[in-house]
Length: 362
Length: 128
Image 1 (tube, rainbow over the protein chains, first blue to last red):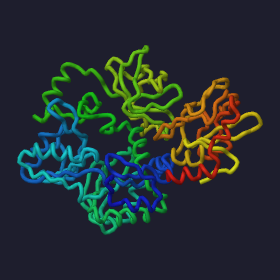
Image 2: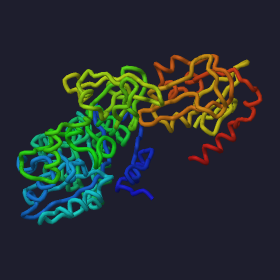
Image 3: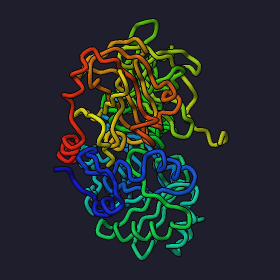
Image 4: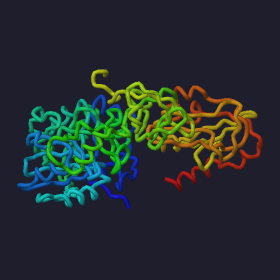
């Protein structure tokens, strides 16, 4: 049986259609994917992301220990800041992509993907480096309130100075009387907050947000639109766009790999790969003929398979057909023409700039 | 769930409606609801032959791809081309505006072998 988040009953009350995702019974949609997608882009949406995992590093060795398994550089962020990066294997392959919330040098919370909860905890525990590493996944509930009106809604429920919490910052705060870690992070490309709360209080928090957000038209938003929202921003999804074989350099995440910060697991392999050059790169593409590309569709050029689609959808905002694919570096430049083989037929595509949705173009 | 009495149905959630010598085909209200917002549809061309139980096209929502199965065999004599530009008609009006193809049956007795509204309702309830 699939696992249930503390918000399972709330989803049923809102008429959600439930699906199994990464072993969890999750809402894929409520009112409808496109309506929810637009609510997040134009107003505000509320997501249950309690299926995400939380692994905490504590103690005098916490920062150094995490630095040794994380590709980005946590010494460059202040207490109260968050940072995105990867955990890598010795081979450079990605164990997971995670956000680390630095509460202090001796207390860092790692937010991991739902599908990787156990794998990540075992990996991190196995490389604890003298830190106290605990899996707190079951203790935390997590809701994401996302959209241009998220701030206005949240302000009604807290005395915490939200304006002082800039993008990728966080602070402890009470929201609707529930003690939270209030983080200005998300996976939608919109302004918004992720609220980490005690699992037992998640429903109280959820209900308060739904109530407080009525004037802004807050909508419960499911995994369906979470996927289209993140893909419009070309945010990678572990398990679709990356796995234990792919390296952050191949996945277009070089910007979160700090090779000069000191040693970390996977560094040597990544240095070598950088020197030798990549054999594949993740790029954004747009179909220039009708169709929708999906995960696993072959990318072809002149009739030969040259790559594979890792994510694809019709963009609700742009109303074009977009996706991410691994292709040889020679075909990775913006403007390169490719084809995606959809049900045996080649459909023309072009490599385009990402994010697909630009802030300035809106 | 809207299941009109005067139509015939497949277990794959297509409907068929006799109209003169032709049979119109689409997907049911249940099917469109399960699928979510339809954003793409791929249909055969007029003149193509379709075979009962075999795929004649595809509907895609943002999230999922679903094949369309011919309720009866025959020749496609007309295609609802406006659906390509306005696939949302399938959600909004699955039994009228959302029709997909018109088939000239090769074996008119096949239609009688499909589910009636009551049997289809029972089939949906089982899946429910």
